[in-house]
Image (cartoon, rainbow, N blue to C red; front, side):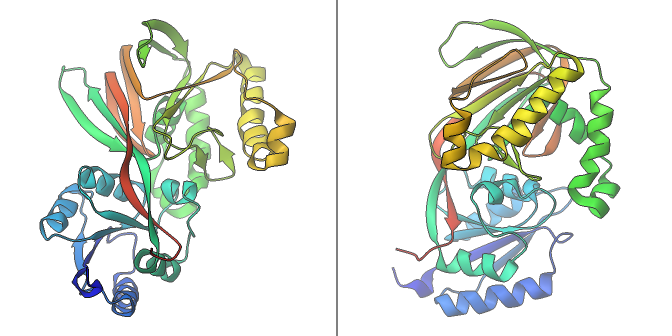
Length: 325
C-alpha cells in the first residue's frame, strides 16, 4: 500500500495537551513519513473517547493516536476492539500505566509522535469486563492494565481530583490513608477459568493484564501483556505486620529485586502466603456480598455486586518504537 494513502487520527483530551504544539509536531512527522493529513477528534466530559474513536474509525483511519491520560487510552482501546487498526500512545497525566508497561518514553511528546509514525506494531491482550450493578443492570468495558476492587478502588474513590492535578501521584498518599481506615473487606464467591466455585474474604482483588505502576511499584511481577492470561492478585494482610510484609514484597522484592535476571534468581520462585497470593487465568467470575467500588485502569467505575472478566488474546495492536517492517 502506498504510504501516502495512510491516515492517522488523534483522539485528544483538550485539558491534558497543548493542542497547538501537538498539531505542529504531528503534522511534521506525518509529512516526513508520507502519511495523509491527520484527523483530529476531541474528547469531552460526556465522551471520554469512545464516540470520538468511533467517528475516526468511520473515516477509515489506519492509526489511532490517544493523546491523554489512562482514561483516554482505555476508552480508545475499548472502541478500537474488533478493528484492525494501530493504537499509538502520547502519554499525558499522572499514571500513563500502559505506556510504562510497554516501556515507552514518557514526557517526550516529539519522541512519542515520531515513534507513532516511524515505529512498528505489537499485539497485546485486551481485558474485558461485564459489571452487574445493584439494580441488576449490566455494562461492559475494556481494560488494558488492570481491574480492581478493595483498597485500590477505594483509594481512587477517595482521591481529591484537584490535589491530583497539582501534586500528581503524591495525591494518592492521602487517599490510601483514608482507604486503610475502612475496616470492610471483600466477601465473594468466585470461579477462575473452569475450576469449581470458591469463597474467600480479601482486602484487595486485582486482575492485571500487566503489573507495573508509578513509584517503582510492581504489583504483578510475572504479568505479561501478550500471554493470553491475566494475573489475579488477592491480599488479606493480618494487621500492621501483614501490611508491612505486603508492602515489602511489592515495593522491594517485586519492584526492585525481581526487575533483573540476577535478582529473580536470588528472590526465587514467586510464592503465595496468607497475606498475598497470585493466580493466573483467562476467565474470572465473582459475586460480592454487597456492592463494592470497582476501578478500571485507574478510574473509578462505581459499585458492582458481581462481574465477569476475561482476556481477549492479542486483540489490540499498539505502536512501539522501532523501524516499521
